[in-house]
Image 1 (spheres, rainbow, N blue to C red):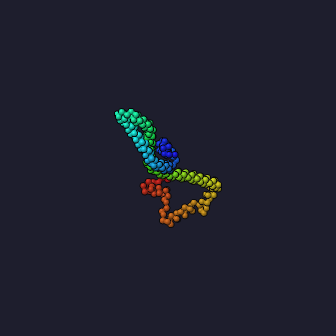
Image 2: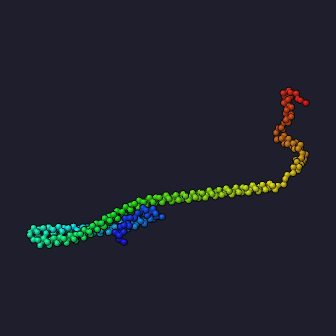
Image 3: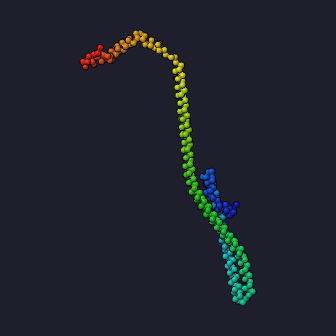
Length: 248
């Protein structure tokens, strides 16, 4: 397909819209840039031929107009010389040239339109390429930021998993503690009840409480500790100090 036949496709292409729909914009930009560079190279190559054709057809049309004018002038000179037959020859030639000039003018106009289209294509391709190059840098920056954000999100997911594992571990620990408490309670229930009489009997073995008090007093004397005063003796000493008679 030639460049001119692709004119409508190139001019109607919305590069930005295509990029917005692309799954991989950066890759799409690289491919589009290559395609546009190829189109631009072809446009530049064919533009020279189209412009040369425009120049040639316009030159032919101008040359034809000059011939028309020349034959008209010759017809006037022939009439001025009184030679009508010669004037008629020049007028016939002028009319033939004018008919041919119509075709030349159409060709020149078509060539000019082709040249205009080529220039429009060239300018649009240049704009698209420059726009893509600018967007490529922006997209690369956005992709870098997106990748960093994705990594942060993954780290956040890992943190959530760790928190969930910690909560699960706490539940396991609580379950273990509850199991231990139940085991201790069951062990307490399985203990043999203490016989109170047997406990008191052990207290009075070997002389009972009096012997125990004597042994405690001897230990205090050995350690240089003053024996605790008897409350009644201390109260009696206080009465004597205050010279208050004791009641019988």
